Image (cartoon, rainbow, N blue to C red; front, side, top):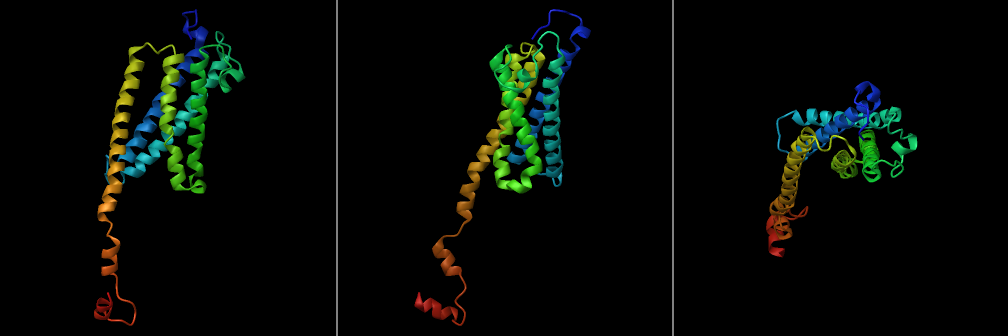
Length: 216
């Protein structure tokens, strides 16, 4: 979206929406990076995990607020004039419809995952972790939306931000997947066989070890 007037005051709402969108992208990316850092266990300083978890949660919630501001401030833009349905319902707006729809869907997914922080006790830690992995998808949808519908898509600084967050995210994901494959193998090597467990098991009550050995 590129308004025809060059005066910033004539397009304050559009500039506010543009700024909020960039902030949302940065916050969501930061939340994803922190989440992958904890999952990959590359930092094991005592007490650090709790601080990272708090930052991860706050960044996700702040990103959700920025997404809401990004959409709501567009209602005041005199050039686009989207209307409430255009910012809330995918494929309604006439401006770069597909890319805007991607942004709307990403916003809804961010809201679902952000609010899930408060429901993890009811849903269970295991289910919550599985659902929470979709946070990375929010970041991907945000990048697609920014490159397809944003006016800063051709800007070097925006592309530098995207590359600067995407490269470490891919690296951390690779570390997480590699360690995830090694863990079952380590557990299998450390688990005793059934025969070894039977030999090392204590004898039944009332029988000496020598008697059970003769029976075997």
